[in-house]
Image 1 (tube, rainbow, N blue to C red):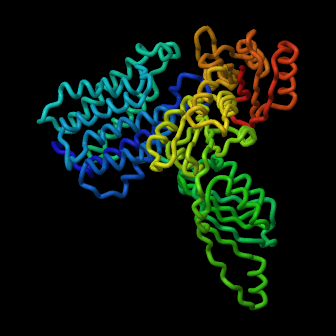
Image 2: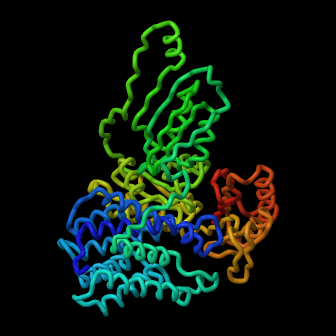
Image 3: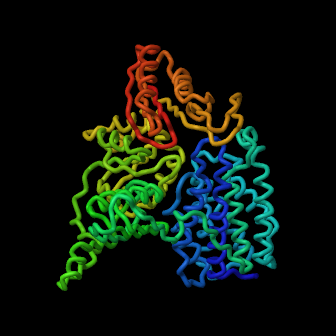
Length: 557
Protein backbone atom coordinates (compact mmCIF):
# COMPACT_ATOMS: atom_id res chain seq x y z
CA UNK A 1 0.00 0.00 0.00
CA UNK A 2 1.56 3.28 -1.15
CA UNK A 3 -1.15 5.64 0.14
CA UNK A 4 -2.77 5.33 3.57
CA UNK A 5 -6.42 6.39 3.75
CA UNK A 6 -8.44 7.39 6.80
CA UNK A 7 -10.25 4.07 6.91
CA UNK A 8 -6.96 2.18 6.58
CA UNK A 9 -5.61 4.14 9.54
CA UNK A 10 -8.79 3.49 11.51
CA UNK A 11 -8.37 -0.29 11.08
CA UNK A 12 -4.71 -0.03 12.10
CA UNK A 13 -5.45 1.93 15.26
CA UNK A 14 -8.26 -0.37 16.34
CA UNK A 15 -6.04 -3.38 15.70
CA UNK A 16 -3.16 -1.81 17.65
CA UNK A 17 -5.40 -1.04 20.62
CA UNK A 18 -6.86 -4.55 20.61
CA UNK A 19 -3.44 -6.16 20.42
CA UNK A 20 -2.37 -4.19 23.48
CA UNK A 21 -5.61 -5.11 25.27
CA UNK A 22 -4.92 -8.80 24.70
CA UNK A 23 -1.43 -8.45 26.17
CA UNK A 24 -1.72 -5.84 28.92
CA UNK A 25 -1.48 -8.29 31.87
CA UNK A 26 1.97 -9.41 30.70
CA UNK A 27 2.96 -5.74 30.29
CA UNK A 28 1.83 -5.10 33.88
CA UNK A 29 4.04 -7.97 35.04
CA UNK A 30 7.13 -6.09 33.80
CA UNK A 31 6.80 -3.31 36.36
CA UNK A 32 9.98 -2.81 38.35
CA UNK A 33 8.55 -2.86 41.87
CA UNK A 34 7.21 -6.27 42.94
CA UNK A 35 4.05 -4.71 44.36
CA UNK A 36 0.40 -5.31 43.41
CA UNK A 37 0.09 -2.14 41.36
CA UNK A 38 1.61 -3.13 38.01
CA UNK A 39 -0.47 -0.76 35.98
CA UNK A 40 1.55 0.28 32.90
CA UNK A 41 -0.26 -2.15 30.63
CA UNK A 42 -3.65 -1.33 32.09
CA UNK A 43 -3.08 2.42 31.80
CA UNK A 44 -1.92 2.20 28.19
CA UNK A 45 -4.82 -0.15 27.39
CA UNK A 46 -7.46 2.18 28.87
CA UNK A 47 -5.86 5.14 27.12
CA UNK A 48 -5.90 3.41 23.71
CA UNK A 49 -9.45 2.19 24.31
CA UNK A 50 -10.56 5.80 24.78
CA UNK A 51 -9.07 6.62 21.40
CA UNK A 52 -10.85 3.73 19.71
CA UNK A 53 -14.21 4.91 21.07
CA UNK A 54 -13.70 8.18 19.23
CA UNK A 55 -13.08 6.59 15.82
CA UNK A 56 -14.90 3.26 15.72
CA UNK A 57 -18.06 4.72 14.15
CA UNK A 58 -16.38 7.33 11.96
CA UNK A 59 -16.46 7.00 8.19
CA UNK A 60 -13.88 9.73 7.40
CA UNK A 61 -11.61 9.02 4.45
CA UNK A 62 -9.07 11.58 5.63
CA UNK A 63 -6.09 10.36 7.68
CA UNK A 64 -5.96 13.80 9.29
CA UNK A 65 -9.51 13.52 10.66
CA UNK A 66 -9.10 9.96 11.94
CA UNK A 67 -5.76 10.75 13.58
CA UNK A 68 -7.15 13.93 15.14
CA UNK A 69 -10.22 12.16 16.58
CA UNK A 70 -8.10 9.30 17.90
CA UNK A 71 -5.68 11.75 19.48
CA UNK A 72 -8.51 13.62 21.17
CA UNK A 73 -9.84 10.38 22.65
CA UNK A 74 -6.39 9.47 23.95
CA UNK A 75 -5.86 12.93 25.37
CA UNK A 76 -9.04 12.74 27.46
CA UNK A 77 -8.67 9.09 28.41
CA UNK A 78 -4.96 9.15 29.28
CA UNK A 79 -4.13 7.40 32.57
CA UNK A 80 -0.79 7.20 34.30
CA UNK A 81 2.54 8.38 32.94
CA UNK A 82 2.62 5.65 30.29
CA UNK A 83 -0.87 6.56 29.11
CA UNK A 84 -0.10 10.27 28.96
CA UNK A 85 3.10 9.66 26.99
CA UNK A 86 1.20 7.36 24.60
CA UNK A 87 -1.41 10.07 24.11
CA UNK A 88 1.31 12.62 23.36
CA UNK A 89 2.96 10.33 20.81
CA UNK A 90 -0.31 10.09 18.90
CA UNK A 91 -1.02 13.77 19.44
CA UNK A 92 2.18 14.58 17.58
CA UNK A 93 1.39 11.87 15.03
CA UNK A 94 -1.95 13.60 14.34
CA UNK A 95 -0.22 16.97 14.02
CA UNK A 96 2.15 15.43 11.49
CA UNK A 97 -0.81 14.31 9.36
CA UNK A 98 -2.71 17.60 9.65
CA UNK A 99 -4.62 18.59 6.47
CA UNK A 100 -3.67 15.35 4.73
CA UNK A 101 -6.34 13.24 3.03
CA UNK A 102 -3.91 10.37 2.47
CA UNK A 103 -0.33 9.72 3.57
CA UNK A 104 2.60 8.02 1.85
CA UNK A 105 5.43 6.27 3.70
CA UNK A 106 7.55 9.41 4.04
CA UNK A 107 4.64 11.39 5.49
CA UNK A 108 3.80 8.47 7.76
CA UNK A 109 7.39 8.43 9.06
CA UNK A 110 7.39 12.20 9.59
CA UNK A 111 4.18 11.91 11.60
CA UNK A 112 5.92 9.58 14.03
CA UNK A 113 8.88 11.99 14.15
CA UNK A 114 6.44 14.66 15.26
CA UNK A 115 5.05 12.20 17.80
CA UNK A 116 8.51 11.83 19.33
CA UNK A 117 8.98 15.60 19.47
CA UNK A 118 5.64 16.23 21.21
CA UNK A 119 6.07 13.34 23.65
CA UNK A 120 9.53 14.50 24.77
CA UNK A 121 8.26 18.04 25.29
CA UNK A 122 5.44 16.75 27.50
CA UNK A 123 7.86 15.15 29.97
CA UNK A 124 9.65 17.59 32.26
CA UNK A 125 12.68 15.33 32.77
CA UNK A 126 12.72 12.66 30.05
CA UNK A 127 14.32 9.39 31.14
CA UNK A 128 16.06 7.18 28.59
CA UNK A 129 15.47 3.45 28.64
CA UNK A 130 11.72 4.00 28.57
CA UNK A 131 8.85 4.17 26.06
CA UNK A 132 10.30 7.50 24.91
CA UNK A 133 13.57 5.88 23.88
CA UNK A 134 11.85 3.04 22.05
CA UNK A 135 9.67 5.48 20.10
CA UNK A 136 12.56 7.84 19.34
CA UNK A 137 15.08 5.23 18.20
CA UNK A 138 12.55 3.40 16.03
CA UNK A 139 11.38 6.66 14.47
CA UNK A 140 14.93 7.88 13.82
CA UNK A 141 15.88 4.75 11.89
CA UNK A 142 12.63 4.82 9.89
CA UNK A 143 13.17 8.48 8.96
CA UNK A 144 16.71 7.71 7.73
CA UNK A 145 15.79 4.79 5.47
CA UNK A 146 12.28 5.64 4.26
CA UNK A 147 11.81 6.61 0.61
CA UNK A 148 8.83 7.71 -1.43
CA UNK A 149 8.58 4.33 -3.12
CA UNK A 150 8.29 2.56 0.25
CA UNK A 151 5.00 0.90 0.99
CA UNK A 152 3.32 1.64 4.33
CA UNK A 153 3.80 -2.05 5.17
CA UNK A 154 7.56 -1.75 4.65
CA UNK A 155 7.67 1.38 6.81
CA UNK A 156 5.82 -0.44 9.59
CA UNK A 157 8.21 -3.39 9.33
CA UNK A 158 11.17 -1.05 9.87
CA UNK A 159 9.42 0.63 12.79
CA UNK A 160 8.65 -2.69 14.49
CA UNK A 161 12.12 -4.14 13.92
CA UNK A 162 13.84 -1.09 15.39
CA UNK A 163 11.37 -0.79 18.28
CA UNK A 164 12.05 -4.42 19.17
CA UNK A 165 15.82 -3.86 19.13
CA UNK A 166 15.51 -0.65 21.14
CA UNK A 167 13.34 -2.42 23.71
CA UNK A 168 16.04 -5.06 24.21
CA UNK A 169 18.53 -2.28 24.99
CA UNK A 170 16.40 -0.53 27.63
CA UNK A 171 18.07 -2.37 30.57
CA UNK A 172 21.43 -1.00 29.41
CA UNK A 173 20.10 2.55 29.65
CA UNK A 174 18.13 2.24 32.87
CA UNK A 175 20.10 0.41 35.58
CA UNK A 176 17.04 -0.46 37.65
CA UNK A 177 15.68 -2.52 34.74
CA UNK A 178 18.91 -4.52 34.53
CA UNK A 179 18.99 -4.96 38.30
CA UNK A 180 15.47 -6.39 38.39
CA UNK A 181 15.89 -8.31 35.13
CA UNK A 182 13.11 -6.81 33.00
CA UNK A 183 12.71 -4.69 29.89
CA UNK A 184 10.80 -1.41 30.00
CA UNK A 185 7.07 -2.02 30.34
CA UNK A 186 5.99 1.12 28.48
CA UNK A 187 8.24 0.28 25.55
CA UNK A 188 6.87 -3.27 25.54
CA UNK A 189 3.34 -1.86 25.38
CA UNK A 190 4.29 0.41 22.48
CA UNK A 191 5.71 -2.57 20.57
CA UNK A 192 2.41 -4.43 21.05
CA UNK A 193 0.59 -1.43 19.59
CA UNK A 194 2.94 -1.33 16.59
CA UNK A 195 2.52 -5.06 15.96
CA UNK A 196 -1.25 -4.60 16.04
CA UNK A 197 -1.01 -1.66 13.63
CA UNK A 198 0.89 -3.86 11.19
CA UNK A 199 -1.70 -6.63 11.31
CA UNK A 200 -4.50 -4.13 10.81
CA UNK A 201 -2.67 -2.71 7.81
CA UNK A 202 -2.77 -6.05 6.01
CA UNK A 203 -6.45 -6.52 6.81
CA UNK A 204 -5.95 -8.89 9.75
CA UNK A 205 -7.48 -6.59 12.36
CA UNK A 206 -6.76 -8.04 15.81
CA UNK A 207 -9.93 -8.92 17.70
CA UNK A 208 -10.24 -8.49 21.45
CA UNK A 209 -9.97 -11.73 23.36
CA UNK A 210 -12.49 -12.18 26.15
CA UNK A 211 -10.77 -11.53 29.47
CA UNK A 212 -13.15 -11.66 32.43
CA UNK A 213 -16.88 -11.21 32.95
CA UNK A 214 -16.12 -7.74 34.27
CA UNK A 215 -15.44 -6.55 30.73
CA UNK A 216 -17.88 -8.78 28.92
CA UNK A 217 -21.58 -8.59 28.24
CA UNK A 218 -22.49 -11.98 29.67
CA UNK A 219 -25.14 -11.52 32.36
CA UNK A 220 -24.31 -12.86 35.80
CA UNK A 221 -27.34 -14.60 37.18
CA UNK A 222 -27.40 -15.31 40.88
CA UNK A 223 -30.12 -16.38 43.27
CA UNK A 224 -30.22 -14.35 46.45
CA UNK A 225 -30.64 -15.82 49.91
CA UNK A 226 -32.16 -12.92 51.79
CA UNK A 227 -35.62 -12.96 50.26
CA UNK A 228 -38.02 -15.73 49.32
CA UNK A 229 -39.65 -15.61 45.88
CA UNK A 230 -43.10 -15.59 47.41
CA UNK A 231 -42.34 -12.31 49.20
CA UNK A 232 -42.61 -10.49 45.85
CA UNK A 233 -41.48 -6.95 46.81
CA UNK A 234 -40.28 -4.62 44.04
CA UNK A 235 -38.90 -5.39 40.61
CA UNK A 236 -36.05 -2.88 40.38
CA UNK A 237 -34.27 -2.22 37.11
CA UNK A 238 -31.75 0.46 36.26
CA UNK A 239 -29.02 1.40 33.85
CA UNK A 240 -26.12 3.28 35.36
CA UNK A 241 -23.18 5.10 33.80
CA UNK A 242 -19.84 4.56 35.58
CA UNK A 243 -17.86 7.07 33.62
CA UNK A 244 -16.40 9.53 33.11
CA UNK A 245 -17.52 10.55 36.59
CA UNK A 246 -14.95 8.56 38.58
CA UNK A 247 -15.11 11.03 41.41
CA UNK A 248 -17.52 8.30 42.47
CA UNK A 249 -16.29 5.09 44.07
CA UNK A 250 -14.44 2.63 41.79
CA UNK A 251 -16.72 -0.17 40.58
CA UNK A 252 -15.86 -3.75 41.56
CA UNK A 253 -18.31 -6.11 39.88
CA UNK A 254 -17.69 -9.06 42.17
CA UNK A 255 -18.33 -7.02 45.31
CA UNK A 256 -21.30 -5.26 43.68
CA UNK A 257 -22.96 -8.60 42.88
CA UNK A 258 -22.27 -9.92 46.39
CA UNK A 259 -23.88 -6.89 48.03
CA UNK A 260 -26.96 -6.97 45.78
CA UNK A 261 -27.33 -10.71 46.36
CA UNK A 262 -27.70 -9.98 50.05
CA UNK A 263 -30.49 -7.50 49.35
CA UNK A 264 -32.61 -9.33 46.81
CA UNK A 265 -32.96 -12.17 44.34
CA UNK A 266 -33.51 -12.84 40.62
CA UNK A 267 -30.37 -10.78 40.16
CA UNK A 268 -28.97 -10.07 36.72
CA UNK A 269 -25.95 -7.77 36.33
CA UNK A 270 -24.48 -6.83 32.97
CA UNK A 271 -21.28 -4.77 33.05
CA UNK A 272 -20.16 -3.43 29.69
CA UNK A 273 -17.24 -1.05 30.18
CA UNK A 274 -18.85 2.21 31.35
CA UNK A 275 -22.42 0.94 31.69
CA UNK A 276 -23.97 -1.34 34.30
CA UNK A 277 -27.44 -2.81 33.81
CA UNK A 278 -29.17 -4.33 36.81
CA UNK A 279 -32.38 -6.29 37.38
CA UNK A 280 -33.19 -7.37 40.94
CA UNK A 281 -36.24 -8.25 43.04
CA UNK A 282 -35.96 -6.63 46.45
CA UNK A 283 -38.07 -5.64 49.43
CA UNK A 284 -36.07 -2.41 49.80
CA UNK A 285 -35.38 -0.75 46.43
CA UNK A 286 -34.21 2.41 48.18
CA UNK A 287 -31.33 0.51 49.79
CA UNK A 288 -30.29 -0.97 46.44
CA UNK A 289 -30.38 2.38 44.66
CA UNK A 290 -28.54 4.22 47.42
CA UNK A 291 -25.77 1.61 47.33
CA UNK A 292 -25.53 1.64 43.53
CA UNK A 293 -25.42 5.42 43.26
CA UNK A 294 -21.99 5.44 44.91
CA UNK A 295 -20.53 4.19 41.65
CA UNK A 296 -22.19 6.35 39.01
CA UNK A 297 -25.26 8.14 37.75
CA UNK A 298 -28.58 6.57 36.78
CA UNK A 299 -29.45 6.83 33.10
CA UNK A 300 -32.68 4.86 33.38
CA UNK A 301 -34.69 3.64 36.34
CA UNK A 302 -37.84 1.56 36.76
CA UNK A 303 -39.45 0.19 39.91
CA UNK A 304 -42.58 -1.96 39.90
CA UNK A 305 -44.50 -3.21 42.93
CA UNK A 306 -44.73 -6.96 42.35
CA UNK A 307 -46.87 -7.50 45.44
CA UNK A 308 -49.40 -5.03 44.07
CA UNK A 309 -49.24 -6.63 40.64
CA UNK A 310 -49.73 -10.10 42.09
CA UNK A 311 -52.71 -8.90 44.09
CA UNK A 312 -54.16 -7.21 41.00
CA UNK A 313 -53.79 -10.33 38.91
CA UNK A 314 -55.42 -12.39 41.63
CA UNK A 315 -58.37 -10.01 42.00
CA UNK A 316 -58.72 -8.85 38.42
CA UNK A 317 -57.81 -5.22 39.21
CA UNK A 318 -55.97 -3.03 36.71
CA UNK A 319 -52.57 -1.77 37.82
CA UNK A 320 -51.21 1.48 36.37
CA UNK A 321 -48.00 1.07 34.43
CA UNK A 322 -44.96 2.73 35.99
CA UNK A 323 -43.01 4.93 33.59
CA UNK A 324 -39.24 4.99 33.29
CA UNK A 325 -37.53 7.89 35.01
CA UNK A 326 -34.71 9.13 32.83
CA UNK A 327 -32.03 11.33 34.35
CA UNK A 328 -32.65 14.20 36.70
CA UNK A 329 -33.62 17.82 36.10
CA UNK A 330 -30.59 19.95 35.38
CA UNK A 331 -29.48 22.18 38.20
CA UNK A 332 -29.40 25.88 37.60
CA UNK A 333 -25.93 27.14 36.81
CA UNK A 334 -24.40 28.32 40.07
CA UNK A 335 -22.01 31.20 40.51
CA UNK A 336 -18.36 30.16 40.68
CA UNK A 337 -16.68 30.10 44.07
CA UNK A 338 -13.21 31.60 44.38
CA UNK A 339 -11.44 28.35 45.32
CA UNK A 340 -11.89 24.59 45.14
CA UNK A 341 -9.55 21.73 45.97
CA UNK A 342 -9.54 18.33 44.24
CA UNK A 343 -7.63 15.39 45.69
CA UNK A 344 -7.07 11.81 44.58
CA UNK A 345 -7.86 9.29 47.31
CA UNK A 346 -7.32 5.55 47.52
CA UNK A 347 -9.51 4.69 50.52
CA UNK A 348 -12.86 5.51 52.11
CA UNK A 349 -11.19 6.59 55.34
CA UNK A 350 -8.84 8.86 53.41
CA UNK A 351 -11.91 10.37 51.72
CA UNK A 352 -13.34 11.23 55.13
CA UNK A 353 -10.09 12.76 56.33
CA UNK A 354 -9.73 14.83 53.17
CA UNK A 355 -13.26 16.14 53.61
CA UNK A 356 -12.43 17.12 57.19
CA UNK A 357 -9.48 19.25 56.07
CA UNK A 358 -11.50 21.04 53.40
CA UNK A 359 -11.09 19.05 50.19
CA UNK A 360 -14.08 19.85 47.97
CA UNK A 361 -13.98 17.03 45.43
CA UNK A 362 -12.44 13.60 45.71
CA UNK A 363 -11.36 11.59 42.68
CA UNK A 364 -11.07 7.90 43.43
CA UNK A 365 -7.79 6.40 42.35
CA UNK A 366 -4.32 5.36 43.36
CA UNK A 367 -1.74 2.80 42.36
CA UNK A 368 -4.16 0.13 41.18
CA UNK A 369 -6.39 2.45 39.17
CA UNK A 370 -5.14 5.78 37.89
CA UNK A 371 -7.76 8.41 37.01
CA UNK A 372 -7.82 9.63 33.43
CA UNK A 373 -7.36 13.19 32.22
CA UNK A 374 -11.08 13.23 31.48
CA UNK A 375 -11.83 12.28 35.09
CA UNK A 376 -9.94 15.38 36.18
CA UNK A 377 -11.68 17.55 33.58
CA UNK A 378 -15.03 16.33 34.95
CA UNK A 379 -13.94 17.07 38.52
CA UNK A 380 -12.73 20.56 37.54
CA UNK A 381 -16.10 21.32 35.96
CA UNK A 382 -17.92 20.00 39.03
CA UNK A 383 -15.77 22.16 41.28
CA UNK A 384 -17.24 25.27 39.62
CA UNK A 385 -14.53 27.57 40.95
CA UNK A 386 -12.31 30.32 39.57
CA UNK A 387 -9.17 28.69 40.97
CA UNK A 388 -8.86 24.92 41.30
CA UNK A 389 -6.00 23.10 43.04
CA UNK A 390 -5.43 19.44 42.19
CA UNK A 391 -3.51 17.05 44.45
CA UNK A 392 -2.70 13.88 42.41
CA UNK A 393 -1.11 12.18 45.46
CA UNK A 394 0.69 9.68 43.24
CA UNK A 395 3.71 10.08 40.97
CA UNK A 396 1.91 8.15 38.24
CA UNK A 397 -1.09 10.51 38.25
CA UNK A 398 0.65 13.91 38.10
CA UNK A 399 0.93 13.90 34.29
CA UNK A 400 -2.76 13.06 33.74
CA UNK A 401 -3.77 15.87 36.10
CA UNK A 402 -1.45 18.30 34.31
CA UNK A 403 -2.80 17.25 30.93
CA UNK A 404 -6.35 17.90 32.15
CA UNK A 405 -5.38 21.40 33.19
CA UNK A 406 -4.10 22.00 29.65
CA UNK A 407 -7.24 20.81 27.84
CA UNK A 408 -9.95 22.29 30.08
CA UNK A 409 -12.12 24.50 27.87
CA UNK A 410 -13.31 26.92 30.55
CA UNK A 411 -11.37 30.18 30.23
CA UNK A 412 -12.77 31.39 33.55
CA UNK A 413 -10.95 28.78 35.61
CA UNK A 414 -7.26 28.60 36.51
CA UNK A 415 -6.03 25.13 37.39
CA UNK A 416 -3.02 24.58 39.64
CA UNK A 417 -1.57 21.07 39.87
CA UNK A 418 0.26 20.68 43.18
CA UNK A 419 2.59 17.76 42.30
CA UNK A 420 2.02 15.67 45.43
CA UNK A 421 3.30 12.13 44.87
CA UNK A 422 1.93 10.47 48.02
CA UNK A 423 -1.14 10.73 50.24
CA UNK A 424 0.93 12.05 53.21
CA UNK A 425 2.38 14.75 50.95
CA UNK A 426 -1.11 15.70 49.80
CA UNK A 427 -2.40 15.96 53.36
CA UNK A 428 0.45 18.16 54.60
CA UNK A 429 0.30 20.36 51.53
CA UNK A 430 -3.50 20.79 51.47
CA UNK A 431 -3.48 21.89 55.11
CA UNK A 432 -1.41 24.91 54.03
CA UNK A 433 -4.31 26.29 51.97
CA UNK A 434 -5.41 29.75 53.10
CA UNK A 435 -8.66 31.05 51.61
CA UNK A 436 -7.60 34.63 52.39
CA UNK A 437 -4.39 34.34 50.36
CA UNK A 438 -4.21 35.02 46.63
CA UNK A 439 -4.10 32.02 44.22
CA UNK A 440 -0.39 32.18 43.38
CA UNK A 441 0.60 32.58 47.03
CA UNK A 442 -1.45 29.52 47.97
CA UNK A 443 0.13 27.53 45.15
CA UNK A 444 3.63 28.51 46.23
CA UNK A 445 3.00 27.64 49.90
CA UNK A 446 1.43 24.28 49.08
CA UNK A 447 4.21 23.32 46.68
CA UNK A 448 6.82 24.30 49.25
CA UNK A 449 5.16 22.11 51.88
CA UNK A 450 5.78 19.01 49.74
CA UNK A 451 9.52 19.23 50.42
CA UNK A 452 9.00 18.85 54.16
CA UNK A 453 7.40 15.40 53.95
CA UNK A 454 9.21 12.06 53.82
CA UNK A 455 6.95 9.28 52.55
CA UNK A 456 6.93 5.54 53.12
CA UNK A 457 4.57 2.61 52.64
CA UNK A 458 4.19 -1.05 53.53
CA UNK A 459 2.67 -3.49 51.07
CA UNK A 460 3.21 -7.09 49.97
CA UNK A 461 5.40 -8.50 47.21
CA UNK A 462 3.79 -10.21 44.23
CA UNK A 463 6.97 -11.95 43.04
CA UNK A 464 10.49 -12.92 44.07
CA UNK A 465 13.12 -10.38 43.04
CA UNK A 466 16.24 -8.58 44.20
CA UNK A 467 16.25 -4.84 44.80
CA UNK A 468 19.71 -3.52 45.67
CA UNK A 469 20.83 -5.58 48.66
CA UNK A 470 17.27 -6.63 49.51
CA UNK A 471 16.12 -10.11 48.55
CA UNK A 472 12.36 -9.86 48.11
CA UNK A 473 10.21 -12.96 48.49
CA UNK A 474 6.73 -13.34 47.07
CA UNK A 475 3.98 -12.62 49.65
CA UNK A 476 6.43 -11.02 52.11
CA UNK A 477 5.80 -7.49 53.36
CA UNK A 478 8.07 -4.82 51.97
CA UNK A 479 8.77 -1.34 53.30
CA UNK A 480 9.32 1.37 50.69
CA UNK A 481 11.00 4.64 51.69
CA UNK A 482 10.53 7.23 48.94
CA UNK A 483 11.49 5.12 45.89
CA UNK A 484 13.61 2.45 47.57
CA UNK A 485 12.67 -0.90 49.06
CA UNK A 486 14.40 -0.88 52.45
CA UNK A 487 13.01 -4.01 54.12
CA UNK A 488 11.54 -7.40 53.24
CA UNK A 489 9.86 -9.28 56.07
CA UNK A 490 7.27 -12.03 56.49
CA UNK A 491 5.94 -9.91 59.36
CA UNK A 492 3.78 -6.85 58.62
CA UNK A 493 4.49 -5.14 61.95
CA UNK A 494 8.21 -5.87 61.70
CA UNK A 495 8.36 -4.31 58.24
CA UNK A 496 6.48 -1.23 59.45
CA UNK A 497 8.72 -0.74 62.51
CA UNK A 498 11.89 -0.99 60.44
CA UNK A 499 10.54 1.46 57.89
CA UNK A 500 9.64 3.96 60.62
CA UNK A 501 13.16 3.68 62.04
CA UNK A 502 14.57 4.56 58.62
CA UNK A 503 12.28 7.55 58.23
CA UNK A 504 12.54 9.26 61.63
CA UNK A 505 15.63 11.31 62.42
CA UNK A 506 16.60 14.00 64.93
CA UNK A 507 14.76 16.69 62.96
CA UNK A 508 11.45 14.79 62.85
CA UNK A 509 8.54 16.28 64.79
CA UNK A 510 5.43 14.46 63.58
CA UNK A 511 4.60 11.11 62.00
CA UNK A 512 1.31 10.46 60.23
CA UNK A 513 0.31 6.81 59.87
CA UNK A 514 -2.63 5.88 57.64
CA UNK A 515 -3.50 2.22 58.01
CA UNK A 516 -5.26 0.06 55.45
CA UNK A 517 -8.18 -2.32 55.39
CA UNK A 518 -6.02 -5.35 56.25
CA UNK A 519 -4.70 -3.86 59.53
CA UNK A 520 -6.38 -4.82 62.81
CA UNK A 521 -6.96 -2.54 65.80
CA UNK A 522 -4.42 -4.59 67.73
CA UNK A 523 -1.77 -4.12 65.04
CA UNK A 524 -2.19 -0.36 64.78
CA UNK A 525 -2.06 -0.10 68.58
CA UNK A 526 1.25 -2.00 68.52
CA UNK A 527 2.67 0.47 65.99
CA UNK A 528 1.39 3.47 67.96
CA UNK A 529 3.00 2.22 71.20
CA UNK A 530 6.26 1.46 69.39
CA UNK A 531 6.58 5.02 68.08
CA UNK A 532 5.51 6.66 71.34
CA UNK A 533 7.96 4.58 73.39
CA UNK A 534 10.95 4.87 71.04
CA UNK A 535 10.38 8.44 69.81
CA UNK A 536 8.64 10.35 72.63
CA UNK A 537 9.55 13.69 71.06
CA UNK A 538 7.60 12.86 67.88
CA UNK A 539 3.83 13.46 67.72
CA UNK A 540 1.87 10.50 66.36
CA UNK A 541 -1.16 11.13 64.14
CA UNK A 542 -3.08 7.99 63.16
CA UNK A 543 -5.95 7.62 60.68
CA UNK A 544 -7.91 4.64 59.39
CA UNK A 545 -7.54 5.12 55.64
CA UNK A 546 -9.32 1.86 54.71
CA UNK A 547 -7.15 1.73 51.60
CA UNK A 548 -6.51 -1.56 49.78
CA UNK A 549 -3.06 -2.89 48.80
CA UNK A 550 -1.03 -0.70 51.18
CA UNK A 551 -1.12 -1.75 54.84
CA UNK A 552 0.49 1.49 55.95
CA UNK A 553 1.03 4.89 54.33
CA UNK A 554 3.47 6.91 56.42
CA UNK A 555 4.50 10.55 56.37
CA UNK A 556 7.24 12.07 58.53
CA UNK A 557 7.81 15.81 58.91
